[in-house]
Image (cartoon, rainbow, N blue to C red; front, top):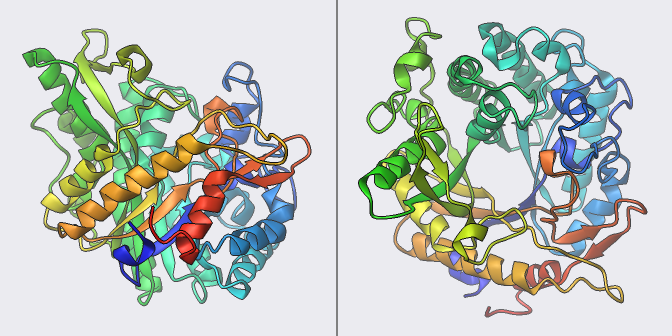
Length: 448
């Protein structure tokens, strides 16, 4: 496998998110987000840490982009913080926030790095959450205003856009399980959030395309390949239900198929929060879909989990190779999910907008020897090439993440980066995996 096998126009890059790297949480007119509030609440973050400093990318972005350029990384996915752009959630535009992202975008372009902008990567303004957040239909107007502001100020230079990062993740973990911001739990919070996010997904894509007709407009989905934990009928049904929730719930309304209602009976509960014509409004033909996958899960029946009657048999308990997140290393998962997306026959372009692995890393004599991560990336890339050679229109791959960062409720412990960050000194050290990927991109190690 070599870079040229993927074709000359294949997109290679890395991905990040504003809250996870920027820090400067109170700087230059920024208001608190739900993740500022959540991480400052005792007991919410496993390591009792916050993203207040994170990687200090807000002030160190130029040196980080210099490092990115030195590693031959041609594309950079980042997100804008709604709270820097519209601190009140809507209305007043914060010029300092606009200026920062203008500097960041210009700094990318002057270095020959193509910026890919994610509009919403989970950091909702707290002022909007105080009014109900994604549970309330009233969120739609501020969200569309936010997208319009982004298009107005950045659309002349940013050519690749993503509306959402992983709607199932931020609604499932934040509005059903309560383990991510805003920390709500239960189906009575989840169902209205699903309805309004699915509606914003269609309307947001349409709005950006109308404002920026020449741009490539996409959105991203979290995925895990789901297999049953056994051959038993109950576990097989559990796998179908989890697959419907984790991989189909937001995709199928976008494609005009409505919410899944065959393997899991959620649609009536979601429909309760919709108005006539909403399902049609959810449909939009995106220029590309971002597929994000790290692992597969094995589902088993559980009477303790309402609605889906399923839980996940953890990788560590199954005795399989796994990452520090307890995610199984199973490269075929990404091949399977790419084939699944292609099976709809309605998706014209797929970009793998996140894939990567967290392993325990340490700096020894100025080096980080992370052979497990390098092997993981090689194997998953090989499965992406396999899918591409079989006709799946996958046209890009972005590694999560460029550098170690604040991993949400897990704190700073899991390290996904190609670049190691000492969070006390903020010293950056390129890991062996980062050096390998740089060599792969430059052709110095043509075959891997």
